[in-house]
Amino acid sequence: MQNAFDKRKEELKEFSEALDKLDIRKKDEVVQKQAPDDLMTKCPKCDRFLVKEELFDNLMVCPYCNNHMRLHAKDRINQIMDKDYEIIFNNLEEKYLDFPDYEKKLNEAKEASGNDESIVCVKGKINGINVLVGVMDSFFMMGSMGSVCGEKVTLMAEKATKENLPLILFTCSGGARMQEGIISLMQMAKTSQAIGKLKEKELYISVLTDPTTGGVSASFAALADITLAEPNALIGFAGKRVIERTIKEVLPKEFQTAEFNLEKGYIDKIVKRKDLKETLANLLKLHRYN
Image (tube, rainbow, N blue to C red; front, side, top):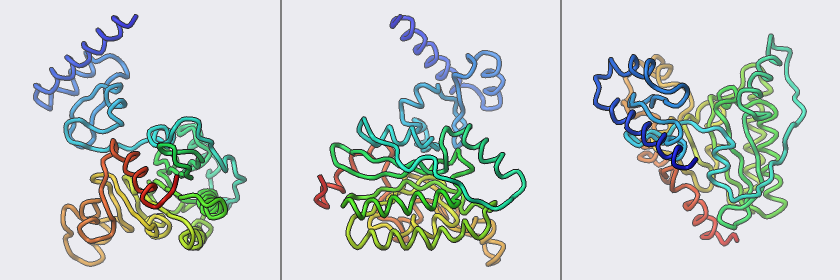
């Protein structure tokens, strides 16, 4: 069985390498005709075809262009946390406005992502260090922040304060959830106040991933003691085109990237995905957590 598996992987590798030698206009046609179903994918940045299994083994980072692709929250948690973590604050009661088809969209998002909301909260350890971690999921309505998301962040901050634990939040969001109107915007003040109280006692680290925008970028994502980001992550408030139309100027190509924000002092360090767990563990140790 193992020999057959290894042979299959070698065949996929050879197929992928052969694709790299083709004219880019021919690749799609070749993949459609010859690639095994559901085993290949294309990097959205460099357009190279990749074997899904190898890409997943590489933490969803393209080996050719270093594009850090978006992750499901639970995949991120499994990469960062030690085993035997506990999911907390699950299935909170939703309170929302009577927006057309909103309940249907919520149910579809739950089914597509496997989560109950746009953020998954866990209690566990990173390299043996006790910690609370919240991970936003772009596959749940583009990581939008509604009342339940805001409540979870607030509860995490309060729990960290009460139990003397550090808090780490991975942000990935298109902004406040418009279907909840002013209720979603209220979460900006609510979460910011909770984070402010937490920082009086404990360490708060935010890790900005692609994309971190809108109300999330203007609230708890921006308030950390230490702010990290993944390479090339989109980080900003309003969209680039909206800003250009407003100020009547052309913005730099690298505008709103993690690298641009690092240069301007908005974030403290850019960390590759493969180094995130070790970096976070070292930061926790430096702040005397164990």
